[in-house]
Amino acid sequence: MKKLLTLPTIPLSLAAVLLMGGCTPTVKIEPPEKPIVINLNVKIEHEIKIKVDKELDELINNDELF
Picture 1 (cartoon, rainbow, N blue to C red):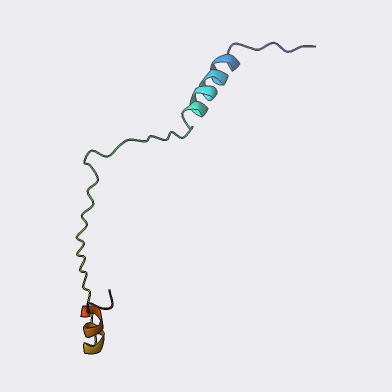
Picture 2: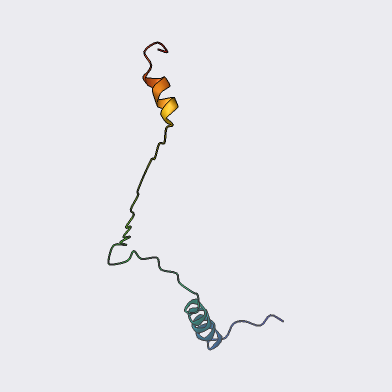
């Protein structure tokens, strides 16, 4: 014999489905209200030191070489 769904089982099963639907997790991705600010204080120093021997300096200044 087949058992037909009785009147009280339909609302109970509908209520169970609605309660189970309320348990599903939701994920919301929202942008922040304030913009993201990145402060970079960068100081770059560059120093070049050149030392030349007197003899080498005389060679470079020699007109016959060039």
